Structure formats: C-alpha cells, structure tokens
Length: 303
Ligand code: ATP
Figure 1: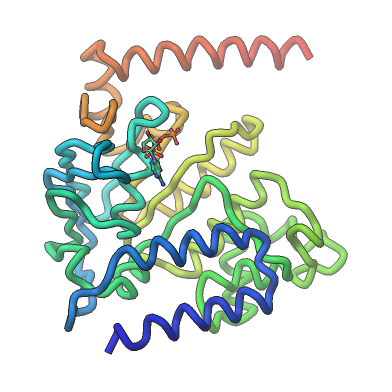
Figure 2 (figure 1 turned 45 degrees about the vertical axis):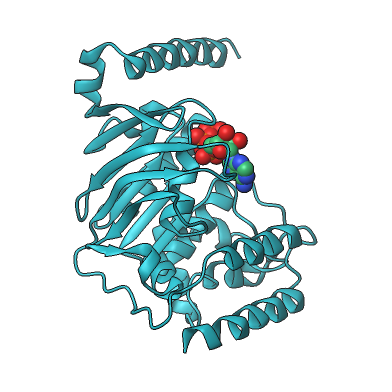
C-alpha cells in the first residue's frame, strides 16, 4: 500500500512546493532523487518506537562503489542518551545522519532503532520518528508562522507559538511589524543564521520526534547567540535520544558519549574527561580549539 502512496506523496510535495515557491528548488529535486534510491520492502511494517535506542552495527557505506566513506562503524545511543560525533572535515559525520534517515542504503552492517532495521520498516514511519536540525535551514517564501508550522501538518497557531517560545524566537517574531504573518525567505525578511536555526528548532519541537539529530553549523555564530542556541538545543535534546554532530568541542563536553570519527572509522570513544586523558586525537583537537578561542577572546577584548 505504501508503494502506492509514495508517488502520490511526492506529487503532493511537488505541488505544494511550487505553490509555496520553495527557495531552493535544487534541494527538493535532490531530495526526490535520493528518495528514489531507497525503496520500502513489500509489506514493510511501520517502525514502532518504544524507547528510542539507536544502534549502528558494523556499518559500511560509500556514495560511490569504489570509494568507501564509512568503514565498520558501530555505536549504541541508549534511549534518551546523547551521542556526540566529532572529527575532521570529511570524516563522515553528516553521512551518519543521512544513513539513519535512510537517504541511502548500506553496503554492510545494520542500523537499528529499538531493534528494528531501518531498511526494513516504512520510510514514512522512520522519518516521522526522526527530527533533524540541519546545518542550513531552507526557508519557504511564506510567513514565519508557516515556516514553523511546516514541522507538523495541521498545527494550530497556539502550537506554533508554543514551539517558537521553546526555541526562544517568539519575542523576535512578536517584535516584527506583521508578527507571525511576516514574510520571510528570498522575497521577504532575511533571517540571520541564528534565527534560521531557531526556526528549525521550533519546527522540530512541533514534530516532537523521539530521535533527534543536531547537525551543528560550521559557520560560527557570535558567542552570545551560540551560547543561547546551545541552551535551547540542550532543552530540546533532554528527553530524546540525540545525536549531535559537533564542530566546536565546547558544545559537547557534557555528552554521555563522544565518538571521534577519522576517515570513516571510529578512532576513539568515551566521555570528554576520558578522551582528554587518552591524549589522542580528541585531546589534540581540544587543545587546538582552546588556543583558537583564546585568540578570539583577545580579539573581542581589543575591539
Ligand atoms: P564536515 O565536517 O566537513 O561537514 P563530515 O565529516 O560531515 O564533514 P561527510 O559530509 O559525511 O563529512 O562526508 C564524508 C565523505 O563523503 C567526504 O569525503 C565527502 O566528500 C563524501 N560525500 C559526501 N556527500 C557525498 C555525495 N552526495 N556524493 C559523493 N560523495 C559524498
């Protein structure tokens, strides 16, 4: 039955997208393309999330057959726990989240949510269970209220406002001349990186998924905005299983578990304190970032 629904879903999406004037058409077609790469198996059941445990077992993957990006990656995020993933650029961090969301199928191993293989449940049920706060949020040329409400079909104005409050963007919106009806996007108000991220957080709050992926932006926000966003994200992640892809180590010192990915392999794993004590790759990255942030602070002080 789902096989039958999928093309209709896609058509509906294309129609809504054109009607609403999606800014990034390419992103949508990319999405449609990647969608075609994975298929529901006939008669696939819906994912039944009971606790929200996420498990990668010996995952092997490459975007192209002759170039492997992940080699034998294994980890478990207990229900409600937080896993932080760090590592050099190109190590495969964002790829982990694309695989959990099943944009692609694996070349080896399994990814399980509460013991169910993500490749053997319906994509629809899988994607309803996972919320992603991406590095870069795509905004529609529509009202800011619409952009938040997009997180869940049929959300009412009170729910949208509650989500905006949770993401600490409600005050900002109220101060706009048109409030929640203010137009945003290319043909409207341009939002800053931090504001866009808050819209994404509000969307995710509305969706209320048991599993959360936070893909931290590489471009640094100013340190006050950054700290405020981190607090908001911390609250959002509190009651859910969370995977945080982090570029700044200062944001993940409290994570239950940190894995250091290096060239597609788990090079180190442990808590912040354990990893510092190892004096390996993580300790090196920490020392380097600490030195850089000292320089930043000196620069700010000199302004
Ligand atoms: P960053 O910290 O820079 O965001 P990352 O650790 O998240 O990097 P990934 O985005 O997971 O890295 O990419 C891992 C590898 O896979 C890189 O070598 C990248 O070039 C490659 N890659 C990523 N996306 C694709 C794609 N769509 N097609 C082919 N190769 C890709």
